[in-house]
Length: 283
Ligand SMILES: Nc1ncnc2c1ncn2[C@@H]1O[C@H](COP(=O)(O)OP(=O)(O)OP(=O)(O)O)[C@@H](O)[C@H]1O
Image (cartoon, rainbow, N blue to C red):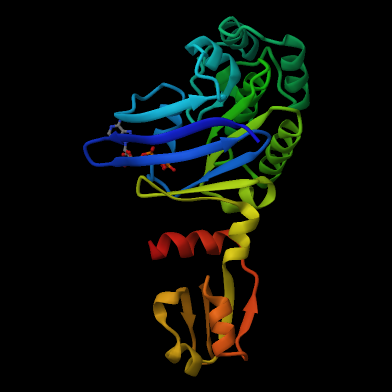
């Protein structure tokens, strides 16, 4: 599997925040989720990838091809940013005319199909779009110029569950086409649970981990037992400890070791949200 994006040793220093030594790879035909809490550097890294923020150090290789120029790269990236970057006083179709003229492979048929599918009206003013409609419009533009890598910054934030589900469905369909990939940032783990193949976790400006979703879900377990067991366990093996008079629960990646020592312990699968919280709590 080829890397569509390879980022090595990228850093950015702001006055009160450092994006530090970022090394990640985005794989072809995968949905890669970029997971991090608020203010951990997701938008900054996405803007660096798009050339909207200058990096201080490091290298970014696009589509495993060192010969691509800026225009080639722009043509192959489909972008959906949180802020939208649209002119409110234009209609959807007028804005589309502006955007489409900057791409080599604009496909108006595709655009019209997406507008129809998303139940948008091309004659409507951008200022009249709700948050969810705006995201769908941005997605229609991003998907209509034959991009190979769709990069989205927090596309699901503020959307209702139905629209989020629809978006995840579209992303899944998109990566089933040969050579198409998706990279999107989020702090909503349930989105990733549904569609992501690969997960990159960022915390305080540093990458904690890049791992397949299935591996990540295998790594941790929820354990439950009585409080005498909790007393004997090494607390540094546990996260998110919840203790009551009747017993305790906790998240751990040392569940095999704990099972050997305390066979009576209850071990259950856990979800991405708990794993994410455990990882960002420990570090
Ligand atoms: N131009 C800038 N100048 C100074 N600091 C900045 C600039 N842009 C971002 N930052 C800081 O960098 C940090 C990371 O911000 P960033 O927007 O990348 O986080 P994020 O993970 O996308 O957060 P959120 O989920 O809230 O959107 C923040 O502390 C922010 O204040």
